Image 1 (cartoon, rainbow, N blue to C red):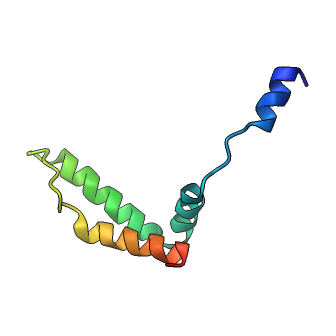
Image 2: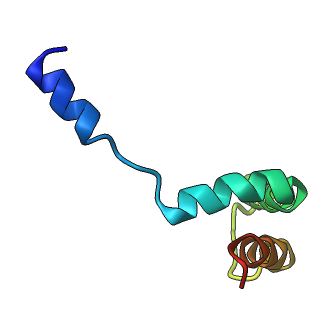
Length: 73
């Protein structure tokens, strides 16, 4: 292994806590994430293309509850 490759291997970016939590969320409550993503995509693709502050608030609450469950809050 050359010196540059060796340095790169030492300094690889490590996943942060959110990355670990999101991975766990996908395992624990994939429907919450899917429902929120679907809502956002549908809101963005609607005729008005107007995403308001509360467009997907119900779905977001489910994602937030999942996050808290995974993080132990």
